Length: 126
Image 1: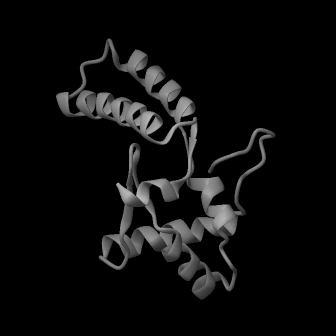
Image 2: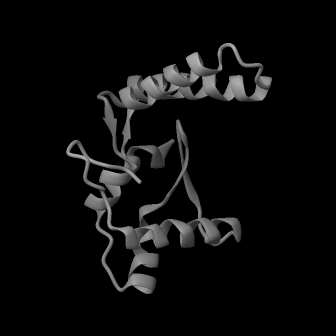
């Protein structure tokens, strides 16, 4: 449930249904995902189709970009906070490797694509 600079939600509550339907379809093999430095995200075409079918609404590219763009510095700050929180907690090696991996992937994405905000469409060619 992302908010903008002013604290307003980026999407209406009804769009939560999109994410649930996409996740269910993903589990059942109906939808592909886009690999990003922070995990997998829905493809625009899938959300657009689900929105039209289930909500009778047009899901625009602008909405998709607003919700799924990766703000590198925000994620790196989050990873730094998590690293500090868990540095004195015995965590599994897998958790620590994933945390380090996300930091590395975010830095590589910033170097590859430039800028601090990366459109989800940039990750289609990876």
